[in-house]
Amino acid sequence: RKPQMAGARAAVTSAQARLAQANLSLERTKILAPYAGRVLERNIDIGQFVSPGNILARIYAVDFVEIRLPLTNRQLEFVTIPEVYRDDTLGIRAPGTPVRLTAKIGSKTYAWQGHIVRAEGSIDTQSRQVFVIAQVDDPYGKDPSGRPPLKVGQFVEAEIEGIQLNDVAVVPRSALRAGGEVLVVNEQSKLESRRVDVLWSDAQNVVVGSGLDAGDRLVLTPVGTGMDGVEVKARNVTRDERSRDTESESPRPRESGRRASASEGTS
Image 1 (cartoon, rainbow, N blue to C red):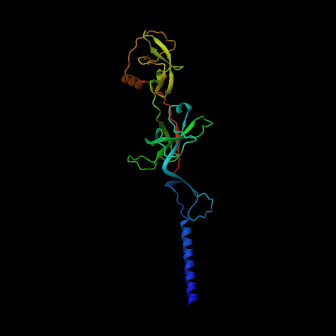
Image 2 (image 1 turned 60 degrees about the vertical axis):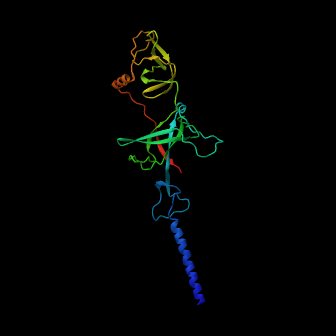
Image 3 (image 1 turned 180 degrees about the horizontal axis):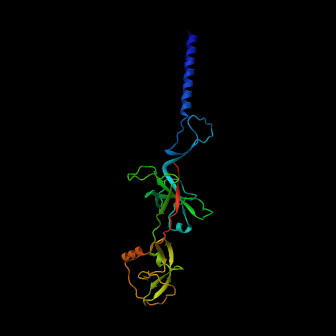
């Protein structure tokens, strides 16, 4: 009986080894990502045999999403970018400049809040622009307002919070004339051309750094060229009156915002 018992034990041991190998092979048929994410592209199907080195799928993390935003050399002057230098030690960094991202889906516009985390290490050779990276945390998190997730590949418009400018004047863009000049009414109630230093401008306003002093009377009424020295009767216009006048004017085309697509987030 001892030989038969030894043979039976050997058969059981062999069967257990085959079972363990089968369970291991079955476990290896399940591919798990090391982080929470979503499948972007799948290259295999159920029942298909794969070999080492085959690309099974492409996935991306959903803990945060990154968006590349192009900035011109002039825009960089007014935005604080968290740069990384050679001797810097990697670690937890304070959140960078706030960014508001918006996207129109159907007839509704949705917004996400993020911040600038870094700038790319080189300048684009074609556009001569620098791409900065904005990060939005938990883009697929459920929002109480019913806002949809910020999906990879979606086009957005970005508003980056700039630095605060002190001792500047904000004037209507319509008051700026050719050659970077404005018209003011001097102490003799005569028109006088004044060259100003334009720091920033958008579709409605111009930020002037120098060329205007506190108390200057700026001409908002459109007038022709060659009017220097003409005596006029100035009328002060309040902000509310100016707003009503602007609403009554024919609409002007607005500058379109730059767009950027959400890129793959990394864990």
